[in-house]
Image (cartoon, rainbow, N blue to C red):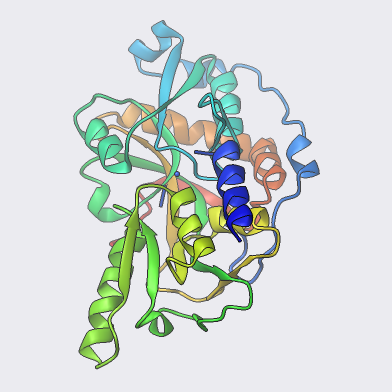
Length: 309
């Protein structure tokens, strides 16, 4: 058991090192290693889009995209903090289209990133980051992903967690500061008000630690985005599975995307136009397919599509 726990932790941290959903809510399929070898077509500079960039970014020829650590299969960090994944591929394509270089930098948390955006310290985070109306004062969202939230549980689902109601009385891991944490805390209050045992909410700083809590038995389930959970289930080699797939689980339509400072409407607009062009030429679809995210494709990307959490 100790060996298997160490194995999944090493697999998670080696492939990645955190945010907070993927596959079709009715599917638990996972991307294969061979799919990750798919080549993404290089883009030619679109002068009309480049001309719309803020002068500071255009003159610098580059911009830094902030991330909060691993969020597979969107963001996968190796031991040297080099990032791969769907987000990295999208950054590369957008950068080529705009004639700039997009590099990556890791911040300590999502809260730090949002505060940095609000204060103008950061210019871009490609995400995807959960878009909720409550966050619109801190950042402008350019949404490019449709998401879902589910549970990761031990194989066979021994605690029979099939929806939010059945989480009552269980130990549920969540990522600290995310929308899933808020939903599970509210559900715990609902459990108590209905005379059921409250939920023991375990908040962790990152996703690998959260999934390890389930693997080791410290938690009965991890409640989070379906995309990274699908990835971790695949890495577990049959020891974990998804639960409550296809349920609302406390959320309505979920959108995730890139963020820019709320004052940078010009950057938000050019980023949206770039993503739409990548859709029209098939590059966006190629990226999502490469990483097994076809059911997460957002047919009509937009700005600040999120509603209240």
